[in-house]
Length: 99
Image (cartoon, rainbow, N blue to C red; front, side, top):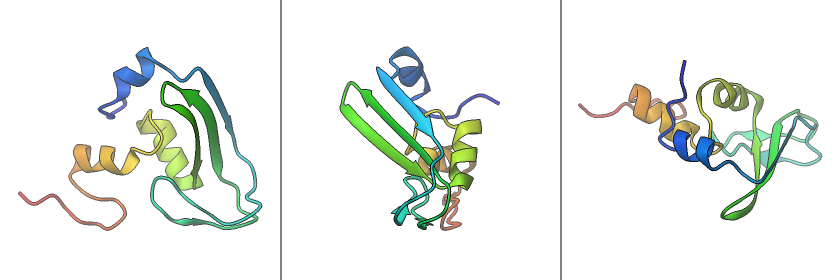
């Protein structure tokens, strides 16, 4: 399955200059950058640190969203919008696109 992100070509053509992914254990509570769920201290999560044209960035993603993003979305922080555009539903609230 190809990436459904509207930004897919921008990311592929202009990748971050620095990109470091890891799966640490949280030392404190965080919020998932995709769904907003709590990542509690002691839980594993995906962390990406990088430097792009707009400067440095850090994302912290719960393991569920990280897996979906890794398989279907190429740009961190756009999963909710990508699913909305592709399926017509907000996977967090269950809200459907009005037809």
